[in-house]
Length: 543
Image 1 (cartoon, rainbow, N blue to C red):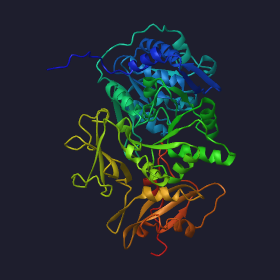
Image 2 (cartoon, rainbow, N blue to C red; image 1 turned 120 degrees about the vertical axis):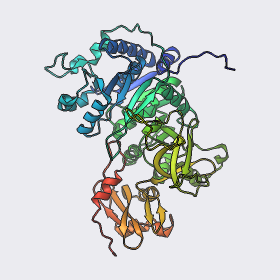
Image 3 (spheres, one colour; image 1 turned 90 degrees about the horizontal axis):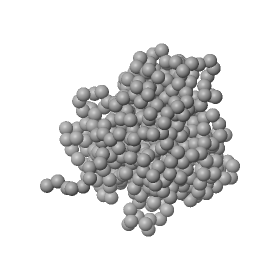
Image 4 (tube, rainbow, N blue to C red; image 1 turned 180 degrees about the horizontal axis):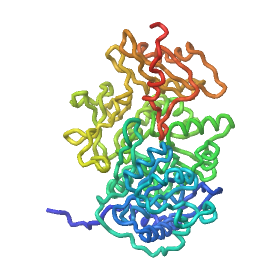
């Protein structure tokens, strides 16, 4: 027997339609690339999204066509999110921090028909345009005043002209909710980038689950600033969940420096912000150096890398709760968050800090497990280390334009994340390493992430990375590679002594090397493979 409820497809256009109908006067504030602050509302955004939808149809964009965006966090990019998927096309957000060759590969592999880009990327487009084999229209996301001179409409279309020249009379079409809606390529350090193709259904379900209080806690009472770029896994889904819930949205544009972020947080009364740990370390240093206090912010969502204890404590001094988010491009991206449970309410500050240092427990819709190298499930006792696997309705089934399931998938439908973790009896998962980065010393595992989190707690340390280096006796031993804060000094012996009493003695790194900077991927993650190459010829002092 089937239920007798209405059947309505879960479509991304329903989010902007809901925001317009019930939160039409709620503000969207953007730092404009042309300068100054742009202000309008969800209602006005919906109108312009419909105009852009008509413009895209006028350019010949049809169902399934990919429309690429090279853009920062701004109101025009937000409109493109909804207009592109709303006409049954695919919004392909491209990471501009990748190498030019990778960007060319991604655009050609996706077969983008239209490419929309911010002013910042005009030189890049000029460089790579001859190599783009499928793009028929280039759209500069600005007004005519800022178009390069001389330029004709055959070369570059003006976004504002396109919007203004089309009617806002448009009825969002209905279609199958499993239709492709978004495309994002992974930026792995090996092999060519791989495309992850999201559906309308997966995106709306992800927005629902990530909005929950136990996840990102998005509501109409919120003022939210995604510092995570909108070209990176759809800004962690916040452009969708903010529309779904009618939250005030603050978009920082291309300026991700501490001065701009602090100004926006305070002037717009931001209550929640999301981004990688580097952003918040930078903001905290700015506040410390200038004797500033963060007043409106209540919660910071940290993802992309583990948050060190020192950051959690410093944010707490400003009255800000840090909540870890773990996820992947292949997970849309939200998988777990470190929200406490009811029985954690009486934990002291130190115990609560340890809880927030874990990557958290799954939000509804995501299942997790750990398995040994033979694929056998391991206990969730907080002690067993295993390979982390996930499954759920917004988890990748196969990569774009690959006919079969990825080798990362198991026969019983789980996705191998490439992370090594523990899971405790309460369901809290803690990443101890990437499978390829784990340090094995004397047959035992050492968590490079734990070592890094301790090291950045030293007052002189700005950033740290732990890598395994071949050892004649122990197979591998950890080497600590450290970047000091500007003007700070610390001796090798002092840094090694900082581990005392914090970890098992045999975990303590055998040496510390101080460098000017660490290598990072295009999304800001530590590039351990590159670091190991840099120290390929390293020799232990005692060896």
